[in-house]
Length: 84
Image: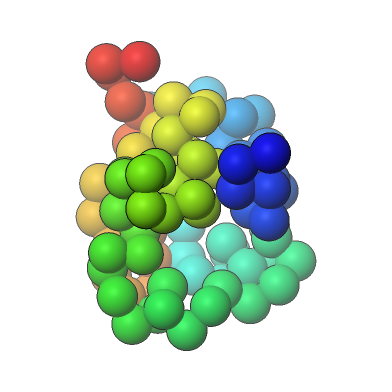
């Protein structure tokens, strides 16, 4: 399965009906049950909506969300992708 490591985040987003979800990095790590990689803290590209080069993006794109903004080390805002 694509992005299997991030399945818990996918399930969390899938069960949420909000148009916009703001999650702190700490919240995301609690959902996942492990610490995000250093690259998630250092590079906004890690949060890219590009499933071709970022397998973790499947965890939000496959359930109808995309990242809208990222404050590195702080929070991520996911919004419903109305194109899906």
